[in-house]
Image 1 (cartoon, rainbow, N blue to C red):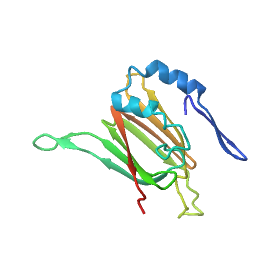
Image 2 (image 1 turned 30 degrees about the horizontal axis):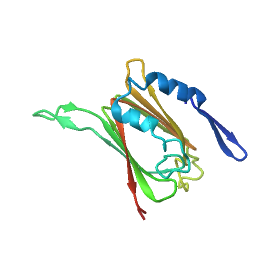
Image 3 (image 1 turned 45 degrees about the vertical axis):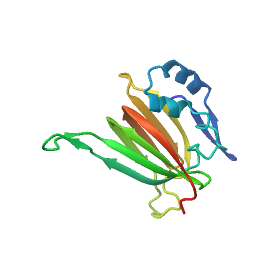
Image 4 (image 1 turned 135 degrees about the vertical axis):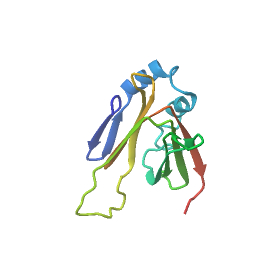
Length: 163
């Protein structure tokens, strides 16, 4: 994280987002509509709200290359992430459009290849802008991290017990 500080304590995690809130205020007019809506949503960092991604678990990550043109040679990149909400009462769908770059790193313990939750809980995320005003979404899990640079992203809450 560039702006949000995440500290692990003996009682869990503590987050300091003061610097991020100030930063977000400086870029909000440059953010695409959907990314801005997600970044500024009241529930986004309200850990008691089911729509908040904090403590959610990865269900699926789908990477596609949508193609155009007669020979389908004009290809793009999209990433769709499905998360089981923290309270298991709905799914979160994040779609990243016009992906320019992405990194997904895990830190799995090879002595336990089938961990209960390989990524662990979604801890915190932040939306930033790159030097050329592309959306950057950084996510920190307990045992993984993601960094996705894209044109825009969308968020969708799908209520209801999925299981």
